[in-house]
Length: 119
Image 1: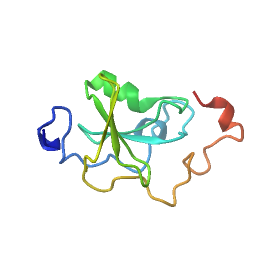
Image 2: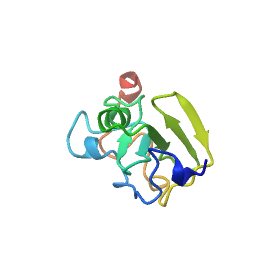
Image 3: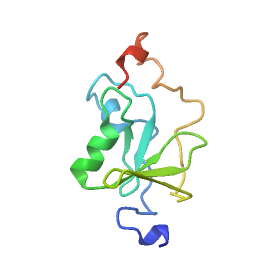
Image 4: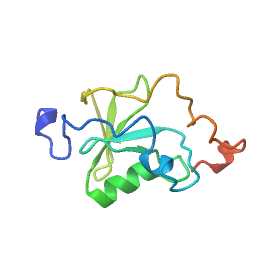
């Protein structure tokens, strides 16, 4: 099945920004480890290793099953319902946060003990 025919993937949905929308809006400690992009609506959320796990939270609440990596050099999707990876599905650009953006990020918000706070 072509990616544009898979329910839950919208190839016209652009990313909501360069960082986790919820972290940047003040929900949680305000920093993330890695970023995920909702393949249905483009919302950027933080990964499940991050303190707030906004990516999966959005996917479950919105009923949007596919999350894509929003990390430079990665091209995969994860289906939260079936717990399966998919590779090679091209979402519209940008396909990652800016390369200059640090991981974890955003710059200036990551605590010194960030490794102890990961899930």
